[in-house]
Image (cartoon, rainbow, N blue to C red; front, top):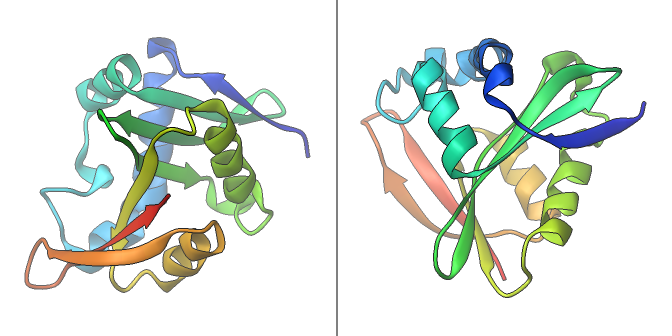
Length: 151
């Protein structure tokens, strides 16, 4: 399957929000995290991310199948969101997209990503891309975020 990245546009916001809610629903239901879960974002949050961040849609066969959103700070990139439609998971799409982002964005900065402590697939995924755990943040009684970095 041919998969491409394209700059997200505000016209994509509704489709992105619907897909994002599908992709983050299980984590939201498990952790009940109303503060930081992308599941709780609204259309204005999506539009703001498109405007302010490095925001790309992942497209296959002219359909949006995922998103990668990267926030940029002075000395680092934070991989804020990466999600792929559940029917497209396990095909290496996410890994290829993250590697493309490493090449697109400056090599002068380091990377960070945060992921739920019980999302073992995410731990393996990010570690396979060279990220290493450096800390934890408790969000709620039921949720800790593992913090990863890549130099």
